[in-house]
Length: 369
Image (spheres, rainbow, N blue to C red):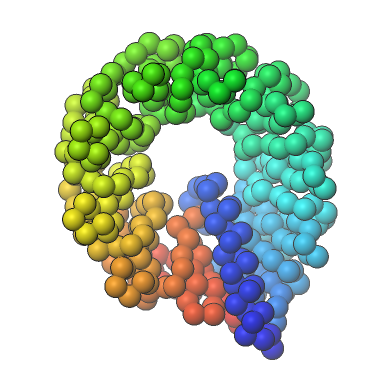
């Protein structure tokens, strides 16, 4: 029987790892296996709660792309859906598999493996970022370039900072100025901006001499926003903008028309048709849809982005999280101390000293058995 201190430390460690990994979404497919903790070791149950893999691991994660990451003696490896170890635990770090590949770290260097465990990009780079449009950003000798999944250099290492490709455009930084390259490495939008966002819906927000505008994939100005002093990228057909005069946020459509009035103290991007917004009156968060209609009232100290049609929000009075549908209906009666957004049909939560998964009906998986 583990001690109370171990339980708390282990639960928080799991939670911090999930915070890091939670930024990479892997779709809504049923993972098949769900980790559980027993006597300080992790195993896996199926969606009916039957033990499929006995508790053997120091840590374990939901499967992604058919393989589940497991940890033994602080080394990362992978098992398949039957529980068979297919990639031995040998890496300091490993990402989830996505599109057949996982980023791994050995010592201080990074590389890429396939699902057979073969090193398709040698473990020799200072950093590697997730694949986008078939290319991986890699850092070598302090400069970024791009590799394909065979390790071939497709964009030379000449970039100070690089984002991932969207619509065949990757944002780059050279000498503290922003521009864009295409997948051949050609600079297609000059490195001239004080700041630039990544492309979304065929547009990118750029800042030059304190003037904010949106450009197309060829650098042509599509929208000029002279009365705006801050803006986000377009999501779900709208972009958040802040009026310089009032310092309040609203939203414009792709033609630049103000569709949700300047009224909020803070806002987040839209996700799945909803956005978190903060009231100026009580400085609490609520949720709206793309028309500005209220989905959740201004009653929350924290709201997570909508994922898989579910919104997690922390009540400012009792400090507990609850799950709501994207229409504002309470999905799960129980409240939780900490939660992660839904991913592959499940959300990772903490209630007291227990950490486990729940589905959108509130069924629990992976708690101490």
